[in-house]
Length: 111
Image (cartoon, rainbow, N blue to C red; front, side, top):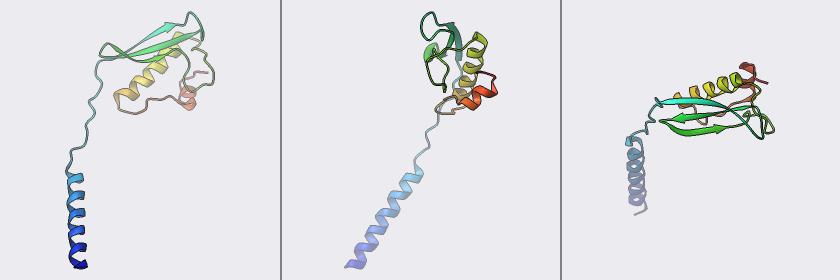
């Protein structure tokens, strides 16, 4: 009797693993209509920031420099734009999360 129970258990396990393998993989649609806009911070943290829009809707609002301690904004609008373009590249290529590292900021020349 134990032999039949073991065979039945193995059969159920085999069937359930086959079903998992047959499920379609979730496909992530590429982001085509993506843009950014830089802005000047009128109040704290000062400096510049950026917003990223997907299909006209704001997806990212970044008033300060990411990956850097504190709440200071970018020193120039150009620095904010370079970082926004990096984040947009990550979003377009499904690099999630699209976070920015200090090494990436250094490579962009942002301090």
